Amino acid sequence: MRFLLAFCVVLVGCVATLPSDNGVTADLACETARMVVQLRNEIAPSPASDKCDNCVDGFIGDGKIKMVCPICKGTGKK
Image (cartoon, rainbow, N blue to C red; front, side, top):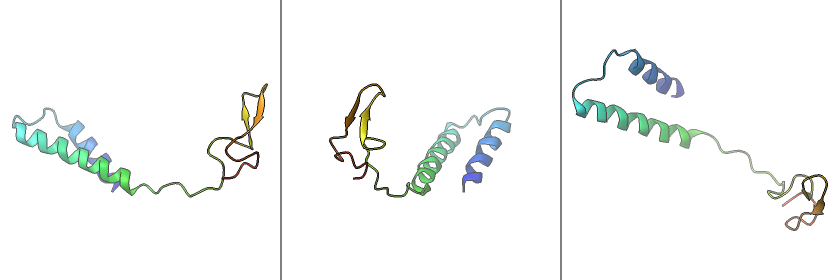
């Protein structure tokens, strides 16, 4: 399905001029947008993780200042 989108983009790029009929141009734009939305929904979500979303290793800070994460209490897990 992803190759179909790439093929359509290449095919449209190979046309010297766009059709003079505005209906055809609008249909092409609508179909392209529909395919983009469909491909976004097909992408698998990242696997669920037990890591804390707020910190990396249980601590937050810029390196010089290091504080225990208030969300996970320093465990690094949710």
